[in-house]
Image (cartoon, rainbow, N blue to C red; front, top):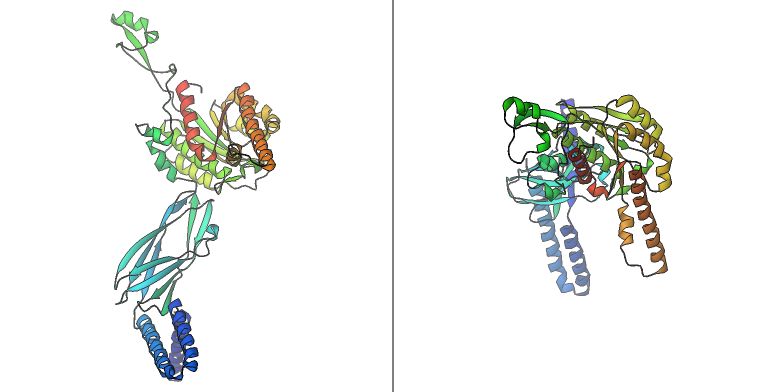
Length: 459
């Protein structure tokens, strides 16, 4: 009996402690108390007003008690369920759904505070929402991650007020969840139009005129007006006693590798995303395009040593392998070893392939230090060096200079921009293809280069 009584007392104490823990006073309460306090001051000056003010105080406190009873009465409550996507897409808006259920018999105002992952650095995130009695509602908000990895969500807190708005009741739901942020797979959906319909120009994708024929023979067919007379097969014409032509098809199953430099030169951020992550996002999209064009897509990264290797294949699971490999690209942004890159290419890539090298060069000297390795790779493969314009310096170049310091800054910006153009000329001199692009245009420019190479039959 004594044990049952102690348990009951403990239960009541727990409920009372939870009541005090979840009870909060709204700003309207403090405004009211402050107003009454000011009136009491006037009550001392004008004693005839004192009883009226005293009565107002008791009426106000009665409303506060009524408000608390409304919020804590019975099984009245508000619940929320957070619904997260299976994975986040890096540098894209990702939708998060909150499902609210108001079990109060009165209309309520709810303030939602969701504990976002520390990567977002949000300290004042909240959502205001009105709920009618016994209403269920869904709402969404978006988050935009800027780095790959695990994102841990904490508790969700609901602060509920009635129409009186004097007190608040807190509900806490400790539904801690984790979502992994992958390279920007949402761009894949955006570029699914790469099937080359009439709307591709909206994305900046160019239609490249096919130059010449490939060497992959398909069939012999009857000559029709408009066929290239150079393709006439004279032996077949003699046998059939009518003009016959050779028909060719685009060469397929060519190997295309995305090679990502994850050294210190790729640490520079633009619009809150590092050059490394721009390269990773572009590699994912170009791999999808390559596979759609019936070629083989592969990739690897390097700094001190090559890592994250995925052999160029055209199997059904290839995109999943590439996505996981890109997700696991980690780096300390050390100095890149192009000698290790050359050894990796020579050892692993035995057939002539298109190599898309994502890196960054800021000076001509930096290129000269690596030129021997780049030329050696380009002898056996078709190498495309992709590096970046400094968009902040480009803005500075086009700004009007009014002071001596601004003239000096603009001159420096012009010098760096000129060096970038010299790098392009130096690489082209040795037959190395180049893409000099702004980070935001990286994906489109890379796709255009790939299509140009395919159209010209350069590989």
